[in-house]
Length: 374
Image (cartoon, rainbow, N blue to C red):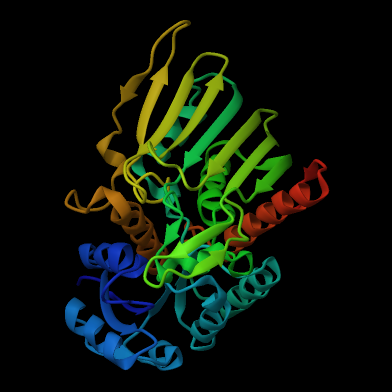
């Protein structure tokens, strides 16, 4: 007999836009292991439209009612970061598995509380670090472990987003300009990208960092209102990894053209590069389709490396941009739930990343190199 589908309630399922609509819902709909049974938004009208659009039987405005509904096994949280802690706790109180988007929480202290609560609840918990499930990134991990470049000596990261290039911001995205909301470049782009670096090479052990706001004012597109930006739009980092290799990174917003992310690894026998390019959204490592390039001879030139089919664990028809990595993570989560294993990045992994970002902030504030305390 086929296993029962895992029934999912999605909090933050805006029917018109947002990460739930562009990534989570199509990913879940593409996987036979899941069934979306409930959606919730802050307004009854939008919740009902979402339920109608996605063919879902239950619509809610109260997250507690969704979490407690008997037709929900897994609660997915895809709302603004300041609301994560309360909603995660609501799902845990209901005894449900929970998938929370990254960042896990507004602060590291909140992340510590949620991690302890999730462990005590005994449910499966996952934080949305889906770049780990990119087929190209997982193949790169195998190549590095197998010595494709020899001993890794350095890693260099460059990531440029187009967000804010016109010094204009839609009202729904303006909250990310406020440092207090913990949803800016450092938390999102740097968080995902540095998680990939550590996923491939091991932990960052010490670092020095600088943060800067180079675009301090934006105009709200719909109203013409001017708002101040306090969240950094430039992140610079020099780090040492647990294997002794060094790493440098520059991530920034407001890139006028050629948005892209590139992670380049140099070793004693060669080089390996992960490249994600495309539009403003697709250029982010957790969203776009990564390509691999390698060099294994002195003075050689880059050539593209084909990713074996075995690294794709979802249907071929799943779109590469936005959806595929999320679907790959969900596929692993379904296996974990059914088998009792725990391989997905859980809240403890999210907490570790929160602590890394705290170290970056501390180095930037003090001007001093810092050890990373996990």
